[in-house]
Length: 240
Ligand code: ADP
Image 1: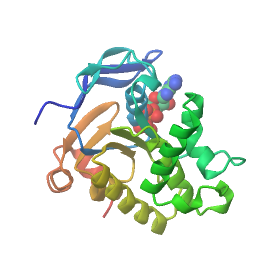
Image 2: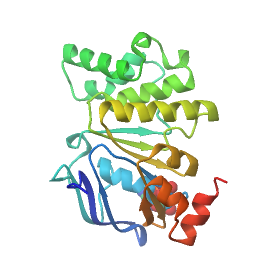
Image 3: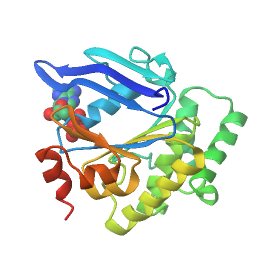
């Protein structure tokens, strides 16, 4: 592998005496789409939170682009974040929702407007900027959340079960859209899911988690055809 773009070096996180992430080593290349797959409670969200800067590791180091980031606040890391509960503000227009992070950082209006427009164009919502969230479909609302995550033009986007609230058909469409966005913008995406099928179809690599540790990491075909532990075989096999 070329020099890793993102690396976790012996990262642990405990809440009280409970060790949620246990001596994690993980390297991700620039432009990769990596899914973190595992059952609920296996530590996936906590790992994303540490990468985004909302949680600090109890021990270990995190590097992004050669820079140690684990002590930096979220806004110094420039990562886009999308959650399942993406919480758009109902009283704001689409453009205001997307521009909210810019407003918080007091970006001048003209520059902010340009960025909002670019972000909405990226998710093909350029014509909907004046609508309210309630005037959009579920998929369009999710795209607004995506545009908001892209508004600082980050290289890295972290997604935590972003499609969990959508119905099957919409979910499949958004999976394609996110893959296309990943390719077109050259993003590095880390995608948390407990859905085996979703991880298998979307990812360049999958890290399968169990109790805060990686059980296996590899290409979808390796994980699917050659699970190295019983846990991986059973967990991934549940798609059948
Ligand atoms: P996953 O994303 O795989 O479902 P999480 O990272 O959300 O797993 O959680 C892993 C474990 O850590 C869970 O048992 C959860 O209850 C616990 N946990 C997460 N955040 C906190 C917190 N702030 N305080 C205490 N326990 C937490």
